Amino acid sequence: MELLGMVTILLMVFISSLLLSAIWKSGTDKKGKLPPGPSPLPIIGNALQLRTYHLDHTLCKVAEIDQKRRDEGERYLRREDERMRISEKYGPVFTMHFGTEPVVVLYGYDAIREALVDHAEEFSGRGRIPLIDKLRHFALTTLRNFGMGKKSIEERIQEEAQYLLEELQNTKEKVQEEIDRVVGRSRRPCMADRGQMPYTDAVLHEIQRFISLAPLGLPHAVIKDTPFRKYVIPKGTTVFPVLTSVLHDSKEFPNPKEFDPQHFLNEDGTFRKSDYFIPFSAGKRVCLGEGLARMELFLFLTTILQNFKLRPLTDPKDISITSTVSNVTTVLQPYQLCVVPR
Ligand code: HEM
Image (cartoon, rainbow, N blue to C red; front, side, top):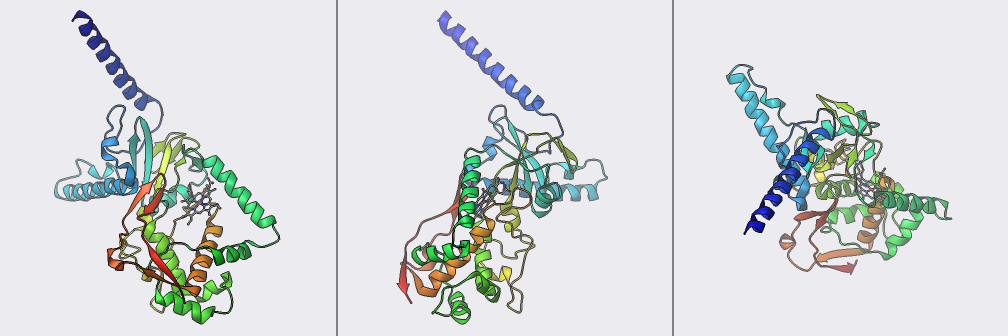
């Protein structure tokens, strides 16, 4: 019994010192003035507020709640006098704790652009994420090999596109009409066609906007103590730019949760460019494969739809387009479709 009592006391002392050291560590590890955020618990940080399978939605929610609080704060300020600046709590730049590690979250176009473009150098570090160096090396080697080979990237992809079939969203007859009109059936689509195919271009942009493939981009880190808005983000702090918050901004895209190619079309049917289209992120660490990826998407889609009709096996309304986030990418539910020669 005595032994049991001793063990319990030791255990309590051990847990208390762990808690104390965690609190001390989170408070003293980094100097600076981090943006505000929900209060973290010792050791687990904000784990209770974070749903790791849909981190982007969780972070959007935190920002939305915050917006609500700010609005309430503004009303409060108007009603009462300027006693309390509730609007200074949270905001488009806030801090969440992943365990004891503070992570600065950038939410919305203005904050992300200001950080990644206007302060490109300071925010050019890479937050800790395994495999990134290997990914970078792989991409650079692949791009170099493409460039050094006899054939251009475009030709290589055109060839690949002949053989590869990808699961796609429902076929849009309008895309096929545009392909038939601009490319015809006798030759392969090429990049020069894109300028004359605004609808297809809009569909491709909308697919990327809608699915938001890399909802949080990849984590950045500030390379030195960085004054940003009212804060000073300490060197080495991880920064998440929530790309979904820009791609699903309702001021820029009126129906952000709907798949609607009109988001990228002007009234006269010409292609509408948007600065909010940032699935590849922005600034110094922008995706190295952007050009290649855009080329692949255009050539794959047009080559497939030039030659095939895609028929779902069930009513398209029954196909789930809800997604989850696995590691850093959005994953859609698998579904079956039938590929029929045209
Ligand atoms: C639709 C397809 C793709 C999307 C949406 C995408 C998106 C992204 C995003 C959001 C980032 C993070 C940028 C940042 O940290 O600010 C990134 C980084 C990167 N991407 Fe992509 N990517 C795509 C395809 C590719 C392809 C095909 C390659 C290689 C050929 C590639 C290579 C890379 C590399 C190496 C980085 C790291 C760049 C760095 O750390 O400086 N990506 N990508």
